[in-house]
Length: 66
Image (cartoon, rainbow, N blue to C red):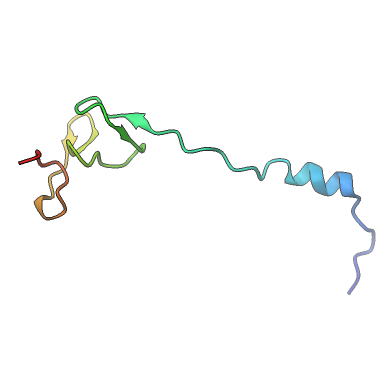
């Protein structure tokens, strides 16, 4: 099948103008001061959000450098 009317280059490009990727902007962990992604655990301190810290000794998350 063929489209009834062909879309112009400008119309296609205007639609695609919102498809650009944005750069990842990490946050700073308030406990250790290292960069971490939002809604993710800080590997050094185990901090996620106020009142929630996670420790996984097997993966060395939230454990000091002992």
